[in-house]
Structure formats: structure tokens, C-alpha cells
Image (cartoon, rainbow, N blue to C red; front, side, top):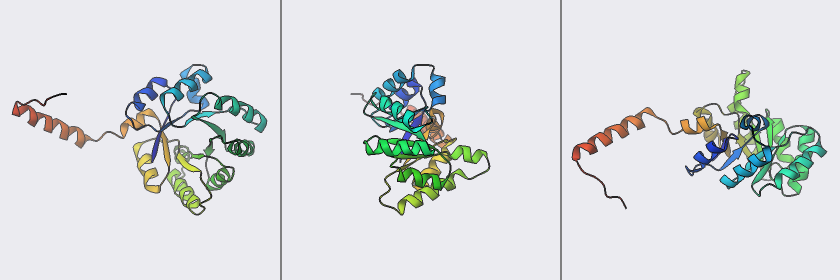
Length: 220
């Protein structure tokens, strides 16, 4: 499973990319607004840090405007993925861009029916929002299972399931268990994946025992 980080903070992206665990980045207008920088400059900097897909979202709501913005954004770098909303206009734009060879991330997916449409429109990724479904009393991860199963029935579908609106590490584990292709997570959640109290306790014990030997290891 691929790990994307969901942020527009360049320092966070650079730090996480240094771990070697980062496969891509997703942004959205809310995250871009928080960064407080010109969006084109922001996307250019992010694309220079990671080699994988960087989702840059349009803000137009009708197809022609989406296409104009998408074509400008994809000119920033080769690894830009255009992010479009799962609306009729968004899917029309998706089909056109996919036919032009542009990778598209169709976002704001909340049903399996919508995910089928995204695949039919040629999306490279579809982004179901599990956390937002959980917030209204629905089971976001059951949607992931449904989409993964449906896509597996049709080899012609090449759309990857990108689990979004991830709130905690269990969402990541469940997504992997269900066979999702990608999870995009806030930096905090990605760092939480490292944590377990027994790891910390075990390392403390090992180091304490090593200190008792009085030895040192050579360094190259």
C-alpha cells in the first residue's frame, strides 16, 4: 500500500520524505489556504521534494473552467495529478483529461456508485472520505471494502482506491486489510504509525543492558 501525506506544509513534506516512506502528496484548497502561499509556487516546491503523484485541486465548478485550470496546473511539473470533485462536471473533465494522458484524482467520494462513475471516467485515483462518513454515523471503512471488491470484478478498471479523511492509525490498518491501494494521511497520523509503548520499553531495556557491558561499537 502506498502512503501519501495530506498537507501543504513544505517543511512537513520534506521531513517525511526523508524517511523514504512517502509515495506522494495530496493537497486541497483548505490546506493550501492554511499554508498562506501562492498556490502555484507551493505545488512547484512540493513536486521538487517528492517524485510521486502530487494532487493539485482545481476550484472551478464547471467543466470548461476545470479544464483550463487543470491544464495550467499540470504544466507545473510532470508529477502533478489533477484533483477534481465527483460531480457531473468533474467527471466530464476527468474523461477529457484522462484521454489526454493526465492523471486525475477524483475527490469527495461518499458512495460505491460514485466510485463506479469515477472508474468509468478514467480516474487514476478515487478518494473516498472515510472519516467524514464516520462523523455522520456511517461506516467509512465498509465503503472501502465495497469499492475494492467492485473494482476487482472488472479488470478494465485501473482506478486506484485512495483512502482519504483518515483520522487515526486504525483507519490505515483497516484500509490495508481491505486491499486499498493508497492512504493519504495527515503528518500526525503518519508519525503515529511508528509508536508503540512496548517498542519504546524494549529499546530502553536493550540500551541499558548494553551500557552495562562497557563496550562501544565501531563507526565507519
